[in-house]
Image (tube, rainbow, N blue to C red):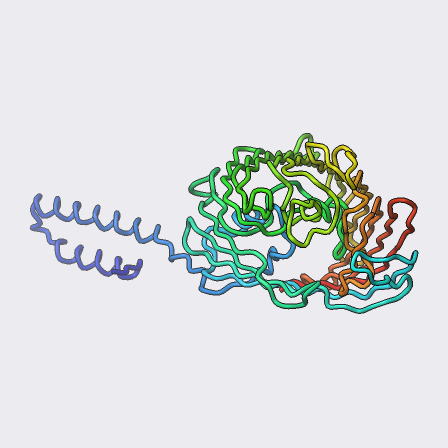
Length: 422
């Protein structure tokens, strides 16, 4: 039933006319007063009525594009940005193309081919398609597809379910499915190329079951994940992580620490490099199981921050039958923002290095489509600037310089990157 002020006024006038007689009894007057009170109550209820919030069936992620979210903390970011009444289905995507020029030493790749030391290429590097399904107030599903190197075929990228609602069940929710493992932060990357910490230790979409608990500035994550270790086939392992995110005297402080029970056999470059890892492993690292840990930070006053990360195995590793100790990588860098002629820009500069990883294959940056790899990248400088010339369209240069182990040479790549989010 719907009422408005005009209808109520007519009703009040009719009642007043009916009872407004000089011979009105006290009982009639009492009845009139009671009816008037009921009408006033009804009027207040009508004034407080609000239309139902209808968010629609289909939406786009243009406000906070999925492709800009942290890969290792995407579940938390999705719940934080979804809003109170999200559409039932939210679509998004990312298209990245790159014009490259590279130069450096003559390098033999792990596949036995010769790496052209001086050349150029234009490539459609990555295409993502994201599909978020808001099943209800306490359930969210995400499926994403990728078309990128080396296969250039459309593949399933991530598929996971989130159970929880930060407004209702905060601070607890569950991640179940296949997505990037919440181990480390892995920043310091350019739009195309990654820091060595990322290339070596970031674990791509993996089957997992993670419980997440956030209270105040802390987020604690713990659960299980599966890897392909041949020593313990399809073994289930444990992970725990704690994150701190707060402002202290106008200084943004982000600290993180993570631990996983076994990196051997994971789909990170370091995990694949063990003889006990996947069947495609061709490198002489050897360890039946080996835990790994990560420390990372970001500290700064907007729009400038200093970032850093250190990630390492916990136990020693045999490399070519020689005990070389633990294998590790670290990164130190800066990130910031500025505006020029009303165009916002993002920039970053990072230095990353590896230790005891002479034989682990990592991607060479030149000719991105060919997915060349060479075992022995020792350190890397990476710098980039991107301007948002149109909404969610970024253009800018990236420079990557790599030194190899054992004085085997160096290579640098200049890239002009164009990335659009839709």
